[in-house]
Image 1: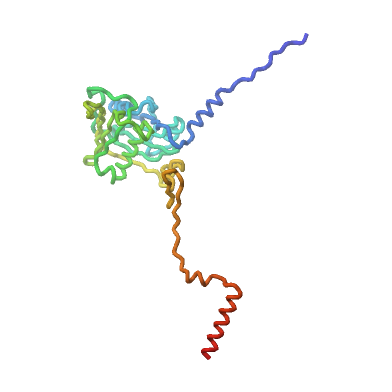
Image 2 (image 1 turned 90 degrees about the horizontal axis):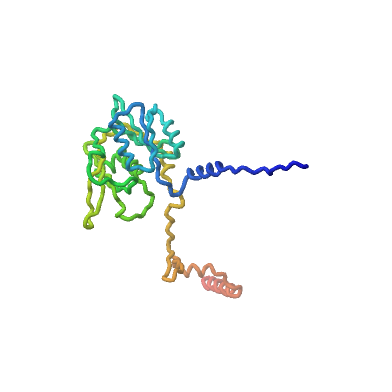
Length: 302
């Protein structure tokens, strides 16, 4: 009796499909997804610093990856660990908190491009009021934020300009260009006084068709410390606009009528008819007559 053998079944490799899908999600896109931020602590932290990072992370959820354990990292001395975490977690933003005797209660906002550190700014917390001390209705997580920057320093000083740019990148949770004004529930207000940055957060409600602003926290007074700017070639690469989003060049002298037909306008210079007559080649008979007339004129002069 021949032995009955079961046909071998091919195993399905689901992990390969998931791997390719994850790689495809990490590839550059014309319109990027909302940016993810990593919140991590340094070698030494304080209770104030931990609570401040929790309050700042409240407005970043769910695009937030929080590391609870401490790290032996010094971003301004060696930025390689930040780039490794950025690539591993697919996150282009990092908030690093560290407290030392020389620089106590410092927050470092870090932004990466292509998993390379683009710029960093370190802020020392001089005054802080947490969210729990404010009463009233709290805004929802991952809100649509309206930013308010008061002070000419945000337009003239390079350090404050970079802070403004990074903050907008951090809390721009929605990538849509158009939205309803009523969907804005949170206002982050920043101002510069005596070289320090004042930050306050408000919850917006509507009463009798008028906006009502209630401060919900946190409230900060930051003193700028160290900063880092990337090389010009990396910055130019990061600021390039994809061809798909670039504005098309305006076609001159081309319009459309009410029926959608394309109408072109041609600008022609006026021709000098006297010069045109010189270029015309006369028939042989006329050329002979012209030659005879010239000979007659010459004989008369003689």
